[in-house]
Image 1 (cartoon, rainbow over the protein chains, first blue to last red):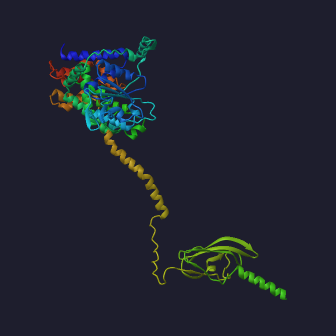
Image 2 (cartoon, each protein chain N blue to C red):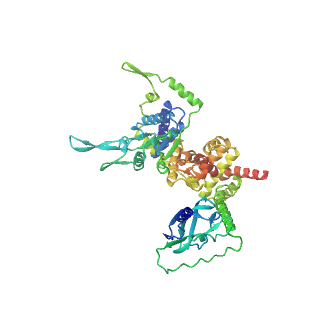
Image 3 (tube, rainbow over the protein chains, first blue to last red):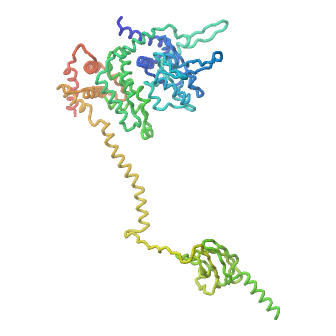
Amino acid sequence: MDKEENVTAFIEQIRNRVGTVVVGQDLVVERLLIALFTSGHILLQGMPGLAKTLLVNALGRAIHLEFSRIQFTVDLLPADILGSEILDQSSATFSTRKGPVFTNLLLADEINRAAPKVQGALLEAMQERRVTLGDETYRLPVPFLVIATQNPIEQSGTFELPEAQLDRFMLCHRLHYPDVDEEEEILRRNLNLGIQKEGRGAVANTEFDIVSDEPVGGVEDLNSAIDATHQVHVSEVFIKHVVELVGRTRTHPNIELGGSPRAGIALIKGARARALIHGRNYAIPDDLFSLAEDVLLHRIRLNYEALAEGLTGADVLNEILREMG
Amino acid sequence: MKRLLFFSAAIVMAYAQENPVNETRESPVGLYREIRNFVLPGSILETKPIRQDTEIIVRINAVRPHGSSFRYDLSYCGLEAGEFNLSRYLQRKDGTSAEDLPILPVRFDGALPAGRLQPNKPIPGNLPRIGGYRTLLIAAGVIWILSPLVLLLLRSRKRQPEISSLQEPETIADRMHPLLQAARDGRLDTSGQAELERALIGFWRERLNLHGESPATALAKIREHKDAAILLEQLERWLHKPNSQSPVDLDSLLDPYRQAIAETKEKD
């Protein structure tokens, strides 16, 4: 098997592994892989109970990556994420205790529940891929991917991430409810989860209990996939499409804040990874059209007139894409 | 007789006590002073209309009947230093003469030194020839109401070119025609190629009636169409695929679109 085939097989195995516990979220798995292969970060938006955490857990175990989860709450402190220096009384010296951010795959659950100071600390670590504790600066492990989640409901007592901070996320994917067939399959699988006995007690299994700990690949396989992503060809014509799309978000009469150059970079990177996942070594307009919403929607802000007319960002973005082609 | 004289003297003394007419009342300029229960003979009185150069402002605070006369509560304020007769500033309501009123001397002391310079009297300005103050107010009101409308109109006119530049004034066929011609002649640069590709996607979306679909879904459905899939795959090989082994025959790729455009024009 040559290198390309290896990467294709690795991707297929990850999708299959995640598919054993998560039903009907192929698009989310694809977006997670895109983020992983491009060293970007991803924000998942969706109602509770759409298997966001399970998905990330399954992905982490499938690739044999270190995985941490932080449940963001209003009383969380930056030190709870980054770590801190602790005084060792016996030796009268400070020792460093690294926080959960020192991992490969970090799930920041309900990121909008934490105070802006904590959000800022995490987003800074995401951007710089390094953390300073006391006088020492530590590099974060490689690969390092943050998968943050936030619910679009229960907004009271939350701190909405501003556009400038949302821009740090390469992708923002909005999860939808599964269709009828998928939901029936979810229920059927849940019926067969069984129980586990431990000592004298027994407890019903959850989906987390059946996620296999056996990885389908390691960091080497992931490195190959990242390398292959960088080999994907992006034509001059494709770059023109990207510039045209981002430019249109800046001049559209309904948009107050358009896409940044970082949005264009994210589109190119994402398109490369998507092309690889779809077995191509070149990006095509399908990649652009497919990723536009996830890359651009969280980066644009509608103006007052558009909001007063009841328009949404998705409406305006779709209008721009229709005008383009 | 003695008793009669005594009663007459008592009445005169009482009147004199009530109305100390000849007593000069002193007060500083600018401060109000009050006279209460002051009986003035004759019919009811009122203050004269205030002139612009009046020396005293007089107010009648209360009037009560007092036999055939009336009893007044007055307050007054001097605007100029000097001695004045307060009665001069009163007139009868029934229009009869008030000459018979007793002299009510008042004196106002000013803090300013004597012989100070007086400001020039204001020269009355001329009202505008057309209309007057009322017309001026109406005109100002009309301008006030119309100005936001004019501003809105100007803003919408300014915005017009932006909107029209984003809207596609031409049909897909109109857009494609010069691009196809340029491609055939080998004059199409990268921007033109990108424009052509977008126009071709738009062409298939229109032909397959996929206007209601999201752009990503529409493109996926276009790829499910037999003819469209082949042509788009050739287009990809031409524009995106690196080091393509088989060269793309542009004529065979673009001819179907030329024919479609020609058919559309014939129908029109």
